[in-house]
Image (cartoon, rainbow, N blue to C red):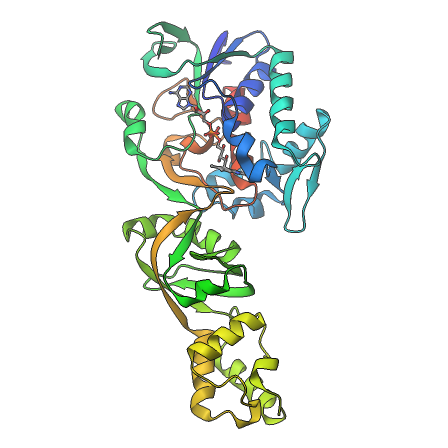
Length: 405
Ligand SMILES: Cc1cc2nc3c(=O)[nH]c(=O)nc-3n(C[C@H](O)[C@H](O)[C@H](O)COP(=O)(O)OP(=O)(O)OC[C@H]3O[C@@H](n4cnc5c(N)ncnc54)[C@H](O)[C@@H]3O)c2cc1C
């Protein structure tokens, strides 16, 4: 039997909360939908997202491939994307006159290059369909009732609702989940994801240098990732590192961000292949080593390696002795660095952990523990790598939660 819904609360005026509130009003036009936001700012993360441009989603139209970009939530989202996918996101914005463009790395942004376009669209739409927005009001508690939920609000009032959608965003401490733990939900301990690695090493003098295809492994684990690596003045960043920080978020928190990485600067190139490449290069090359390197790495990095290995850069390739050759091979394929701490990636950071997905029905986003209570967004144990995946999870889970069953 269809639930009769006349009053719905959405808690949290961020990406997921807004999308959930708009979806609830669309699916239940007769219901009163109230969105409570504790601060006086709506959509504040959308505003600063993607360096102020808002990386709305990622141009990956195949749901199962899209889902692979979530170290937490892959299986859950694969199901959820069948209800609201990247294609639906693109259409949703298009129907509201917001064109999205695809960049070379498949990230999608509004053509305006401004996150304000997204905010204005949401505010306009919410007003048009009649979502009631209450700012400066937080949920301070809730109680399960026989046919709904009683909300306790920070103005000390109580209000009863047929359904409540929780979209509080990523929370950095477990304490913020206590209310839901009390109702019987399992909480996956929150830890940061998407960060860069700090290194105290001379390589940081090469800040700004990008090596196009580095394979980075975390020693003592099977965790690794390959991609462009950016050397910064504090350590290492770029896609290779950021994705690895996400894949290894929990393991690295357990190690208190003290660990060693091993880099193969040529991706997955093996020693034999490199030795062969070097052999043919060296045999016929009378050029000075500083003028030519046969590897797919920037020359600045190559010069740094020569200096680290104390190999004379003015020597010629064909005068290179066997021992030096071996040291070059080892440096390029098995370079090691000690990581001393992490630094937040300013463009996008998220929390790994939250409400366990085993507690949530992916078809509805309703809690399996507390009926009439729905969840959306980063408050769930869902997080993606950088590139528009985190907003897509917010849109998808928000849209489904708003259907209310
Ligand atoms: C700097 C930065 C840039 C980012 N850029 C991108 C990007 O370009 N692309 C991308 O995909 N992802 C990006 N992300 C990640 C993305 O912003 C989040 O994953 C997304 O905002 C999560 O949406 P949400 O609605 O779950 O949470 P939030 O956006 O955090 O919203 C939660 C809301 O709930 C409110 N709230 C909390 N507690 C209560 C309460 N008790 N009562 C009432 N209200 C409450 C909060 O004030 C907040 O407004 C970025 C993140 C950061 C930090």
